[in-house]
Length: 321
Image (cartoon, rainbow, N blue to C red; front, side, top):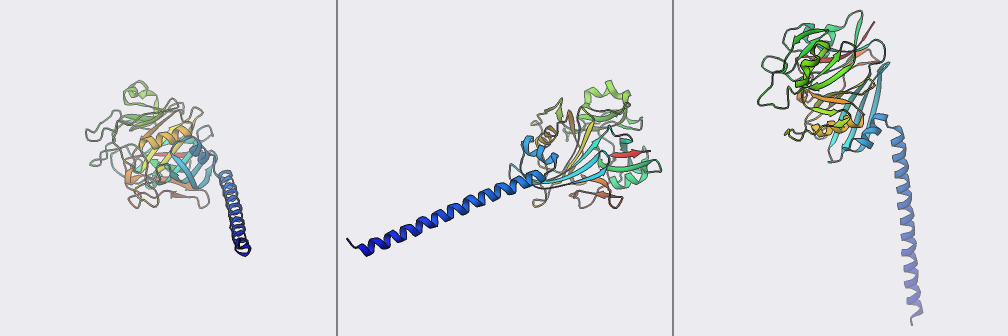
């Protein structure tokens, strides 16, 4: 036996074993560091992000989230996350507590008039502000006929019925299906189009809408609609009078890819809503808040049109003296 050769083999074997032990130690340390980093990230996430991770069924990982306290009872959270289908998404969630005195949710129309025309959400806000009313946030409202700005569904504003019926579109069956309103007692309500007449006289503010997303706390199956990933606007409410206004950006692969009805249902289910509804979206989807630092109206999302588009009407969150 060649003792010298055997010794060299043993030395090489020991070096390899030592290398593997060091490599394993580095790997275990990296895993622990990654786990610790994830715990830190999770601890720094907003409660809304945690709910989406745990209950929405669509969120794989949250990259970042930022919450702005707009006013007492009103918070806006921007969340950048990875969906389970591998697509990056940005969602803007405006949480409004209707139990806070002075906070109201109202319909706005272009130039604060009942006529059918178009105006951007930020410009509509300027026309309804006065010494007693301050706009704190807003999104665009129901679908409408782009040829004449006629809303697809009903339109109530400050107790006045501007339009009291539905105008369906044969080519767009996902429109004119439902309504969302604020009743005279200040409570929100969402229902199907065939339920509108029964509550019409009790609605102070109202617009029509598209597909219901959640109802009685459960997700609604909208698989009958052939809808793609798109920028979306949706509103929902909980049984304890919390309203959520949601805008999902889309049509930009690297920034945000939009959402389906199923995605929105998952988000509203995670937020614990009683009912929620899809509204107008697409290139005009706009989320606006009053920036508390600068005290100016600020568009928070990135409309895929490049800037806010003139729309038929909007939903506004206001404070009233």
